[in-house]
Image (cartoon, rainbow, N blue to C red; front, side, top):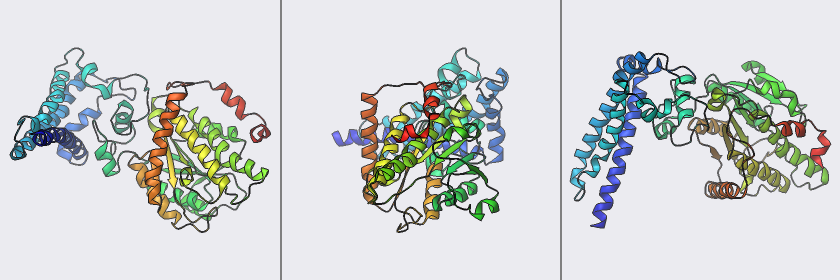
Length: 429
């Protein structure tokens, strides 16, 4: 009997996931099949960028043309699912039809909005409510910030309505098209490879370089803008960061076995403190809904966060910035991604196994699937150890620290700028 009920409840949950998959597939098809798009386009005529309604008549008509047909298809497919699995159910015969009851909530809400029932929009149209965003795009559930991007960032991405699984599967959970992405450490092997892959994905890359080495001819061939900056003088590019959508912190130094005072100073300054200062400067550019929805920071912390790199200071400094990013995620108004990369061939690691081009290709592909902790390595232990470390550290920081700032648009952060503008020597003591 217990097994029979387990099967019935399992099928009931599967029926909900099924109708959600139908909804997201319908939405995706509506952007590629012209007859369906003629109905769906009404939905895109409704809202201004602040999610206020352009015209109540258009709002009402959009629900009859788009939301009601969509929910009706969900209801039909939910009923078909329940009928097909009936032979597997010996108890609770109605449970496989739970997806239908779930769909009726959306169908009823769409009809109420189409009839302009007072209060129906505020009660049932939660992803279109106007007002300031209070959280970045959610990773697995579709919130207002996530859905805003479908309307005003890219209409060929962000198709999901409740769960973002299908977007992750299709690689449409993050659109890089038209975004300006600044890459530090751009003159290195991985930096160059990331520039190529980002441009291939439709982004406009900007190469940030702080070294004295000759810049690769690749940048000129691709028409990549180059921006020079200096470690310890991050505030000098604060205005440039305002025009950046995604900041990819990729610069670093590896002193190998050196453990001198100079090596300690250099490792922490380059691998940890300069990245943290750039991250905080970038967060100061988040001033409105558009920035919360579009801006991100990607930080290359490497798998040295959890595994030995046979370079103690590289490990310590990378773990430092890794833990700071974990802590900062708790209050960040935008998405902070980590790049957990294994040994690839570069100036820092001439003995790396993976090629920089292959690693960069995986990074971009996983980012488009909205993976927040992007792991690319040949070491299977990293895939096990890093999630455990990240979750435990995050909960530890959540329990034993308190927020110093809120997820609102503006924050003076005078103290941050005061620290940043102090002489570099103060950071190195």
